[in-house]
Image 1: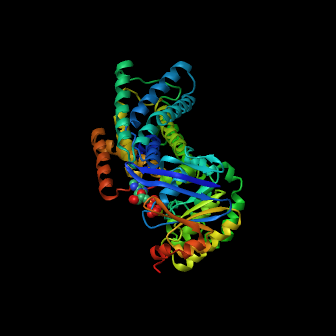
Image 2: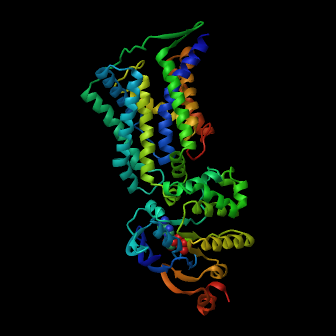
Image 3: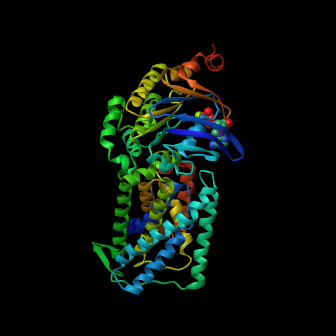
Length: 292
Length: 234
Ligand SMILES: Nc1ncnc2c1ncn2[C@@H]1O[C@H](COP(=O)(O)OP(=O)(O)O)[C@@H](O)[C@H]1O
Ligand SMILES: [Mg+2]
């Protein structure tokens, strides 16, 4: 029973890992950039969600929507004004300057928060905090259950958006061959702006999902960035459904591992999986080289 | 319709075109001939806006398009079928054609264009749900040409469409090019297959290492001695 409880707990937290990672995978699949600041942007999102919640006192899931919208704008501006200019100077397919920029941005954000807000962790009590769903002997925290369902539904919606919509097809075309996509009249910069904005909006949404049950501090970014990389490699770089499955797997390994060993050892398991996948299945579980 | 006026094009410090000029009238089929590395692809990529044009000008319907972003040139009907087909390999044939009509202006004509493509190339209709990466060379070329037709071309530039194809398939592709031309589409045909190309072209230009070396009607080029020695081995 304990194992089942931990397994489901793992799935629940894995949903949020998935949405953070889907964003990372999308940006990589389309733009071939690795956003090292994904975790720090999540941390910022949680502070923004916290501030909105404190200021407006509205339902945390409305806060989540607002945070996602704000972060969409942040992602759009970052790509439109900075990343696109770095990319324009680089001819390499997997540009190094953007890598340096995002890792610098990550450090800037965590140190900035430390300097301005301080090191004290923050958490909020919402109307959902502490509520439980009880099924037999199993107990599930309500905000985690909600966050799981929102995360899974949004990931699947994004998958269909990428597969079926006009914009989604243009995003995939750009991912497969950006020069030829341009020859079809597709404005590459606009596609990059939108893809990166969606990527960061997912981070904003994840921050909103975590707010009711997760304590935020300036230093949580690195942990989440690392987990997101593991998930993306596990699921297949550029694969949206892969990131969903990868996120759930990492969540389960953590929770079930923590049951038998400790949280720390469970993290080592996650790293072990990362190495094994890199060595034996470098394209990941659902991986292909193009965004899908 | 199109006038390329003495363009110089660089890749970094390397000057690939040293001043290429070329003119195409409405409704013509014009050939652009030359060996490997002559600068044919660079020339049409310059028309598509994919290169850095250092000097000279490109005039399309009386307007300079030299500084126009490449995706806007597509809106003007300047469409390219790139060398080596370059389909989107992880998409189906049908999806490749849909991407061809991505722009809202062309999306309006999607259904009729799709029908036209399937009528010209019935094979594509059979294969429409297959991944483009799994097609044979000839089928890929049909798909690449159809993808271009989905973009409502006014000027269609084809970069070595016969490359790597069996002679029967080449004949079929060239017949199709004539058919597309008869629909009112102006054609710039980049080729190394000189005989087949001059057979369907009105006029031709020959370039070598980034310079114009010859131009004239198809007949003049076919009867030119230098041309026969250099490209036809006669
Ligand atoms: N992307 C590029 N970077 C550097 N040099 C290039 C590039 N593309 C083509 N070139 C060079 O420019 C010249 C013309 O090439 P290209 O236009 O492809 O010739 P063609 O299409 O006639 O074979 C060649 O010397 C080629 O090596
Ligand atoms: Mg070429």
